[in-house]
Image (cartoon, rainbow, N blue to C red):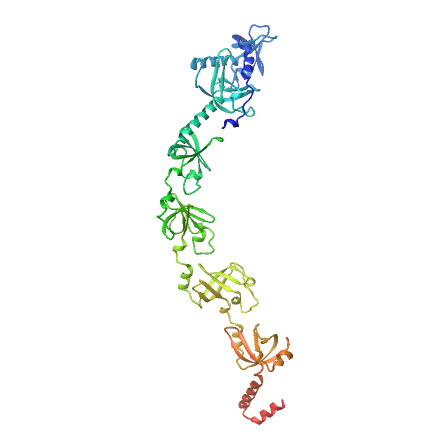
Amino acid sequence: MRIEDIEISEDENFAAMFEASEQKTQSNTIVDGVIVEINNDNFLVDVGQKSEGKLYLSEITIDGEVQYKVGDTIKVMLMSTRGERPSISYRKVLQREKFDAFVKEHGETPEDLIVEGTVVSVKNRAGFVVESKDGMEYFMPMAQGFLKAYGAVGKKIKAAVLSVKPETSSIVISRRKLIEEAQKNKEETIAKLMEDNEPKIGTIKKITSYGMFVDIGGVDGLVNYNEISYKGPVNPSKYYQEGDAVTVVVKKYDKEKGHLSLSIKAALPDPWEEMRGQLEQGDTITVTVSNFETYGAFVDLGNDIEGLLHISEISWDKHAKSPKDYLNIGDEINVEVIDLDCDKRRLRVSLKSLQEKPFIQFIKTHKIGDTVEGKVATLTDFGAFVNLGTVDGLLHNEEASWDNTVRCKEQFKKGDEIEAKIIKIDREKENISLSLKALAQSPADIFASKYNNGDIIKSTVKDIKDFGVFVKLENNLDGLIRKEDLLTIEENEEALKVGDDIEAVVVNIDKQRNRVRLSSKRLESQKQRDTLKAVNDEGGMTLGDALAGQLNK
């Protein structure tokens, strides 16, 4: 407690007030009295005056039992005979006996005597009444208390004896003197401690969540949890117990606040300096997993230095969320140093850099054309990333379905299990491309099962472009009649419109690209070939008959 934090009374006339209050007791005498009556709250004592003196029953009651009865003789102090009823006190007789015993033991001028007791009452602005365990009462003037009157009752204190007054059987004590002397001794001790920066031995008195209080040379200092280890902030209870001896260095003293700051790590060799030049980026070291955080794990090098193993450096798995899924406290692991700055006391290590990349492992056992199973991990505007275990493959929208109007976001949700074919492996970029439609029969495949090149089919115009005309075929399949394959240019530019029926010849079926090429220009020659074929098949029709039939048409 700081001196300036305690309320100090400015009333320096307490001595006069105290003397005035005790003036009438200077001629007090102890007399024998006879108990003549005991009531519920008090009892009457005959001391040979005109009337009996009255005392509270509590003065002769111990643990609820009254120690005297009517007719018993009891010693009381006769303090005043003013008025009809004499003023008497049984308690003061007991205090006189305790006072005499005190003087007999310590004398009337005790030096450097410290007493302990509890504040039992406050006498207005005069001071405090303090009672020791043996029942001895002391008076502590307000200015000597370093206590606020409010809330003082019940407080246990230590105080120095100022004076002993036989004439009033009173002992005056001072908590202020004790505090000021302790403060003076503390500052002298601290001044000696700070004369050099040499490490000193101290004893741990108390451990808290923010540090430890250490007794060094009779004064207490705080070792903040940042000053315990070069690892950074640590929980002191994991390393020390109260009563342990520790070596500390005095860092600073805040005289205004009375705070003495100590350091344990400052008394130790700086491991970062010892490590300088011995460890480099790229080195492989063995460490112990010491702590977990949401963003990764801390690893102990065994020399009071910890390095950060970030979650992104624990595994090649891009979906790693917690270090606890891969490591345990106390695990010994080999890691690679990826960042070392002794000046900034920063060390970052990697576990995954010592492991073979999942992509390399994957391509050792997989090739283009293989069918794989995976789960949809992420959906994007351009497709979906599918987790194949330790790597992800890209399923582009164009490869999700033969229907180009369907997108992955509409077809899947995160977590869906799918089967796909590997259609591309980019070793340089470490990309894997997947396809769902490669596992399904294309509309062009289905079309080819019904039609061949040279077949004549009817369709409907779907769209007209500068380069040709798109027509609707079966199973959402489109056919293209290029501009040069139309019967006439005018047929494309002027005569045809969307929705018109058109007849054309199949000229090419591209199953891989799901495309069908048609030609209406070849329609006439194809019909002639079909007619000739029919003639040959029937055998009875002459060429002239066939040609005549065509001319009639």
